[in-house]
Image 1 (cartoon, rainbow, N blue to C red):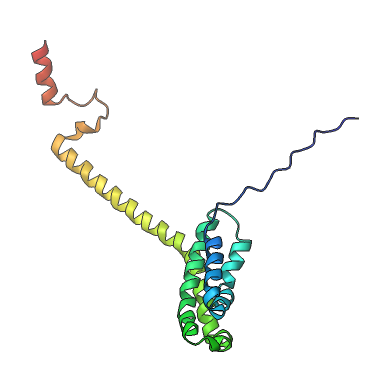
Image 2: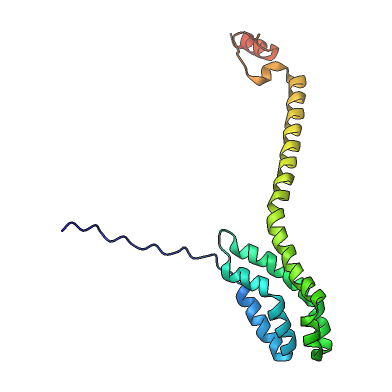
Length: 173
């Protein structure tokens, strides 16, 4: 029998090592030692970040997770401080739609930064490249005014030799 060699199964490439998610988990454990209500608020508020951590794919997964995670945490912190002072208000804070919109909306801002950030960076780099091109053109014009068109090094057979070259040749002969 003519058997084809068994193909080696390719492993899915391991993602970038990401220290954000374990750090977040340890932080939640530490906070839960002091106030389980604040830790519960973080678990509810960080749902978009956790979803991204579990389902995120592609290049720069760690950076995407950090962008969304940090913006999400900034949306949760005001309510965490409120809950730290009054731990009995957990249900009031978590069930208030305005608070949920603020916490989850901060994660949406992180996602928006992921979408809009590269476009803004491309525009900034394009403007910087155009400024550099304008600067190089001005430097080229200054060199042409100072040294003349022979500095361009075009077709030398048609162009006359510069004066400094003629003087040097006559002294060498």
